[in-house]
Each structure stands twice: as structure tokens, then as C-alpha cells.
Length: 496
Image 1 (cartoon, rainbow, N blue to C red):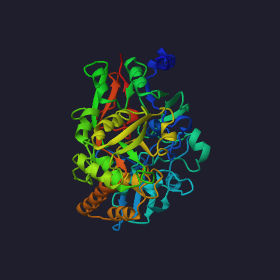
Image 2: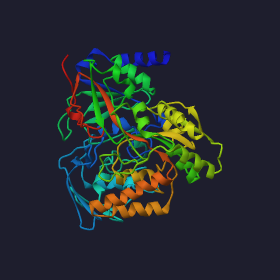
Image 3: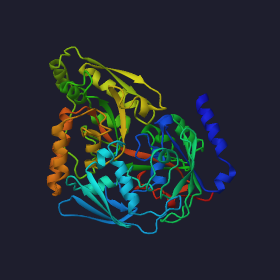
Image 4: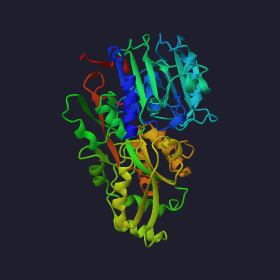
């Protein structure tokens, strides 16, 4: 409680009468990367809430994976799907006053796919073999293999454009983008201030500033919103919905999404290196009940351990009913006739990340799976626990099928969280992404997702309907807008 009060007091000191008059939007972030947080959009520890406010990509994606022009205005591909050409927006200026052109695009994408830099984005864009500057406003991407959904990869929320030559500490601490806001004060562990960029090509922002304060604890973020110390939360737990429903001071938005939580079992760690154990740990779960308990009726869609959400054209339509007896049989075959003891590491860094383990613990007990829940600190969770422990909770944002399957499961991916390294699976991914026929491509991606259900190490039981809460004073953030495509230049604070 003392910690919570001190946080709110600190936020109160930031909020002055002048700040209100100057149209300041106040937000919070979870400090999930702790002191390692950086403004480099390609870094694993990127300062995620600011990335799509400060920087822009060539395109953005709508909630149903349709491309939206950003720094590119039009695009086309060769018949063999191995050459993609983008026409760039003219008259765009970086925050430092330099002009944007094709050389910046080539530099940025070359850095994303640099093997020595080893950005997590490389797993998504590693199919790029060469970026060619055709003229100042035209760039060509040459691929090592066909990719029918290349636009969806270019629309990755981290594939932002930096000015040519911005690397190392400059990219981490002195960010320069083309977005509607520029960094005025960078303090990931305190309050970061983003100032309006009047020369933004989409029009001068209506807000003067955006203030982003670190509040690691999810409950403390809720209290800060209720106390009027911040103006919005991108997501809240469904159990917290009654705090805001019917309250005229807030707008509660329900946004169908491909966001998902997971429990990850690293397949190269005992006992999870046995495929029978992995399958048993997942088939003992009642996914529909988990959705009702964790998310609430209508706030999620059950999933059979696929990261591809229900509105994606390449979603697998398989079923996965709970099978307790089947789980017991597999465990016995694997040498655990009396059941198995496992430990899962979790944190309240995000909503549902503790509760998913609690519900899992209760559900699988009947199959003889005894779960020890180990709590860890919110601050730095993504650095010290995620991908570091044999079993841990996870959280992912919505991604198209070709992106998420390559990013989370390809052998060479930096964010291969379960250490799933299967050459046969990589070949299946290559075959699917090269298929130009949509129906055939869907069938191939279906086979890929079915293999994950049968053999994988990730329990992904649902996709979430996001619950976003904003102050009723805030205008310009509507239901269709995901965090990656909010038109921040149009957001404003209504007169009180």
C-alpha cells in the first residue's frame, strides 16, 4: 500500500494545472524490461508503449490484417513473390529535421536482418536477401524465398524506420523517428515525455505532450486510473471491468484481438523434453472453462495451442477437448504412473499472468499433475524469467500467421520461447509461405498448427478480447484501433 501511495503521489506531482491546459495525455507502462529498457525498436528490450508513437513503419496493419499506408504509399510484387517494390511518401521529415528517403529504409531493414545484431525481428524478416534503393522514393526488397504474405511481415510493429546511420547508443537513448511525437525526456524507470512534432506529415498533433510513467504493478495501474492520475490503460483484467462499467468518467472498449497468454514448457528441459509429457500437460486443460474463469463470458475465444487467432484466414479449425484419462495414460507411458511435479514461474507484470497458472493448477490436478506456482518480481520479468526458466507464463500481441509462426517456432528465431527446433517444421513453414494459392496456403498452415498441438511445448488456451479503458475526456481512440494503429495525431482532450 505504501508503494502504491508513493506512486500515485509521484504522478500527482507531475500533473500540474498547466499540464491540463496544454493537452497532456498521461499513460503508464509496466517496466517489464526494467533498467534494460531501450528506445531501439529492434532491440529485445524495446520501450514498447512508445514505439508506435515516435516511429513509423512502411505500413501498418488493421485488426483484420489489411495494410494501411504509412511511410509507403503503394506497393507491388513480382509474379514469383520474391521481389516487392514500395513507393515512399514524399516530403517526410525526421524529428532532427533531416529528410526521409529510400536510403533510410534500406539502412533500417538491413539492421533488422543483421545476423550479428540478432534482433528478434530477424526471425520475421530473415527472408529478405537484399534491399535495393531504386531512386530516392522507391525501394525494392529481394527475398531468398517466395513470401505470399510479405506485406504482413513488413507491417510488424517493430519494423520502424530510423534515419540512416542511427545505431548503438544513439538508437537506444537518442531516438529519432518520423512519428507524430518526439522524445523530449527519456526516463523508462520514471516518466518519459513525448512532445508533439508539428512537422508530422499527417498533420500537427492535437496533444501537446504524452507522459509515460512507469508503474510495474498491474493493480497500482488500475488505482492510478481510478484516482485520475493517468488517462488510459491499454488492457485491464475482465474482473476489473465492474470498476469502470457504467461510470461516466470512463469509456470501456471491447476489442476482439489475437492477443494470447500462454504457459511455456521449454522442450529441451526435463521433463518437458518428452513429447508425451508435453502433450499430457496440455490435454488435461479445459480451455472453455479457462476462458470463462479468466476472461469472462464472451471476452475470449478458446484456442488449441495455436497462436493464430480466429479471424486470421490461416487459422486451424481443429478441436481439443479436455482428456484427463488420456493425459494420465501418456504420463504413465513416459515413466510417471503416479503423476508428475512441475514448477511454473509467473508474475503480475500483466493481467491474467498469475491467474492462468492458478486455473491451470486446479484443472490439471485431476490428471496427477502437481503444479508449484512461483511468483517473481514484475520489474524486469522479461529479462530475468521469460525464456530463462524451464516453465513460465508468457504474453503475446496479435500477429498474422506467417509472422507469429516464424517468430515463435522457427529454429533460428531469437524469440523461440520453447526452444522448439525442428528442421521438418522449418521446412513446413517455408512451403506454406511460398504457396500463392490462398486455399492451399490455409491448408498448409493448418498442418503446421496441428503439429504444434500434437508435439509442441506451448499451452496457448485462448485469444483475448481486449478491455481498454480511457478517460471520457479523451477523444480519437476508437474501438477498431489496436495499439499499433492508433492515429496519435488525432487524439485530443475534450474541454471540461
